[in-house]
Length: 136
Image (spheres, rainbow, N blue to C red):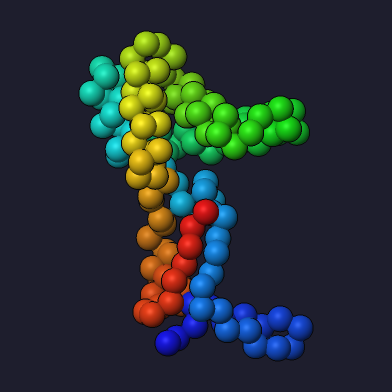
């Protein structure tokens, strides 16, 4: 079995069989096409591209010294979507709330953060066979 990753640390070679990454919002992003389709079913027009472009601005608003300690991961997750919609120029409404509720139900069952960057498959870990990467 090939290691998932080989690291040089302190002059030593470390071979890892499993690489655990806390990657939500860093290496793994929401499935923006699914978000766009769900919003559309509720009458809210927003392309996946517009949502993805709004996301970095939403993160900047969210990742502050005032917001992080005043919230928890679960609460920030849905505040995050409200901020993405706001940054995309989409006001909150009953339709957005219904779409977000549907997305929350999907996420609870399957995980909405499914989009891994294309470049990941070009890394040794992304290409490896017989090793595993766990996303958290």
